[in-house]
Length: 446
Ligand code: CA
Image (cartoon, rainbow, N blue to C red; front, top):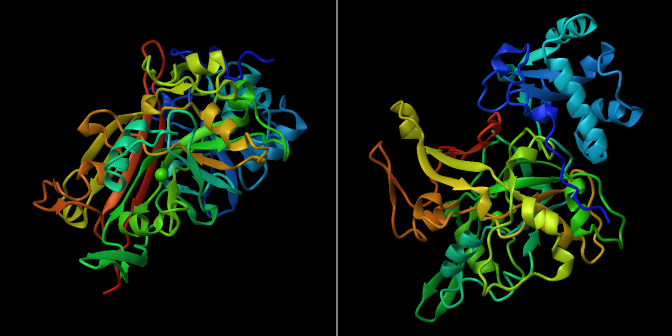
């Protein structure tokens, strides 16, 4: 059996690497060490590109120019597709060769390499003139619940007597979400309506209403790469090779709809009205320097069953991504105020690695497909400044947040905008970012 399906740290991660795209050098998100993949449109059609500094490199145009000639036919065809699904279907080795080729192309070269960069320079588009689309056609989406501090905090509101259910530390919990309503960052969010229960002395009485407790959830998007056949499993030791990359994910949640409907089958209309995902897929390869052990277990915690345990994954399969959530309201924007930081978080507080989640998804033989999306679950830290949802920050609406505009919030009002950000830093390596995932609650028509 393979001992590791995680990619190695190689020359493409060198901290000293520079690009001839000057804005990339020292860029907080997209230096040459990152090279995330996305789908963009400049008005001339939908194309796959790679982010470099403040630019997007048009990959079909690069192929048309005869650059990247070392790539095999499957990789070349995948880069000409209108979505990243075919790129995600490539094996890790093919993704790695593409990364090396892009890194070479974007580094200053002499001779023939210099001529290639002169050609590629004309195939850049400023990011602020590109409309970013959903990276893939998402066939299926599952939302996990791997943020243990969120699971504990949120569980208190729904089940004060037993916040963390007995199965939590044994099995990666998820529900199957709705892929049709996943939208790229920047898409407006419409406040959902539905059934809300009103407590009366005689018991709960449902009414139809717009949600009064609209919330966000800070999650990571895990993009599935090469899939598996129906009836087969993806073993945990191989699962990382089946993950193409990562992004930021906002699982918008209507807490009042959720509270009334979630038992016994789980989330439904309180979650399915929309989810937002960041447009850039930061590859499994780019994140190689930013891995670490799975979240530490106490001696009293159960050891997961063997099918979820691979020694290499337990030592290196955890992600080290810093996370931040910002809120701006209509009044704050009118007053020119900076967005309010709601939390600062860290992906190290995921109880399960992405590999363990994908293995659990397929343990019964469910077939995962390229472009499937796994949500990590809301990520919260053990301290109040790192809670990944308003449900936790305001303790179910009991403790409002006070903003510099003089406003306060318990849940989101119309016009409120939530921005998720993520980045990775490690001594000796260039900082890379996941970009951002933004969404504004649409003002209701007046
Ligand atoms: Ca969620």
